[in-house]
Length: 242
Image (cartoon, rainbow, N blue to C red; front, side):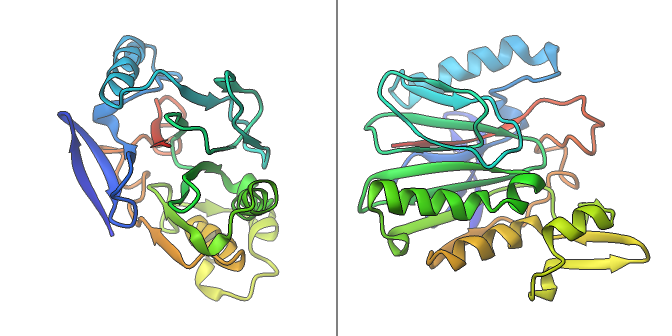
C-alpha cells in the first residue's frame, strides 16, 4: 500500500512493502531535477544537498535517461551513467536516483542480497521489457533469486490518461492475453503501463509487487506531468539508498 509521508518536512510517497530502507518517490514539494523549469534550478540543487545530508551519504548515482532498455550495474567511483534507464547497486551507502514525469518508476530491492535497482519504464522501455531485463540481469550477474526481490511501481501516467494510437498499442499490447491492460474507445487505446510492468516482473518470478494507482497526469498538483504540462515541467524522482 502506498502512502504519503514526511521526509524532514518534505512530502514523499512510500510503499508499505519497503519500509525498512530509505526508499521513496518525491513530489513537487521536493523537486530534485528541474529539467525545463529553470526557475526551479536553485531549489532543486539545494534539495539534492538536503537529501544527501539527511541520508548521510555523498554517493549519489544517476543517469542520462533516453527511454531505452539499457541497464547498468553500478561500479565504485562512477556516479553518472550515460544513455541508461535502469541502475542496479549492491554497493553500501550508495543512493540511486532516476527522474520521471509520467513514465513509470519501478524500484526493486532484495533484502537478503542488500541490492536495489531503479527502472525508468517509459512506453518504449516497457515495450522492450526493461523491467524483466533488469530482474534477469540481477539474477544472472549478481546471483539474486527473483523470489527474494520486492518491487514497487510508483506514480506514473495511468490507463485513464495514457491515450495512444494503434502504432503504440501494437508495440505494447497486441499479443498480450491480459485484456485488463487496455481499453479501446473508437480508434484510440488507453493502456495500463503499470500493469504491463507488473506482469513483466511477475513473469520473472517476483511475488511481492505494490502498484501505485496515482496518475501523474490527473494529479499534476502533486507530481510532475510531461503530458499535462505540455513538456514545460520538472521531474519527480525515485530514490533508494543501499
